[in-house]
Length: 167
Image (cartoon, rainbow, N blue to C red; front, top):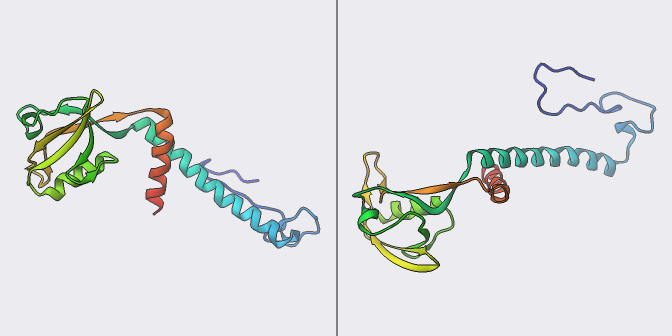
């Protein structure tokens, strides 16, 4: 047994792991395939723990969607007739999967006019917008995205976030 100052993480000392033991249950007396299963299970549970923590973080903080939350007045998006609730589906020839795709598409346009396809009330609309250079050097159009806290979607997004950080 072990008492730790911070009760986080896992600690496992198996009989027969570091010393000889006569017990048939001792780790050192197990067959190689049994040892592999025990060690793999520990590593697997570390991954499961990381995914669960990330799901909780994502669920609590929320995650971006492709739905427009706000349109700044007198912005290129306002002049192009974007409205709150529009769902961005495509920019030029790029299919939009997440809000990061929106930022990248406008950045790649480098100030050139872009054709944005949005879904509004179940119908697709094409809007033309020209990104402008912001003070921090990014191309923006004056829209922000909605942040969702949907628990089912948090499971998907948390798992994706864990995979992306692992890569």
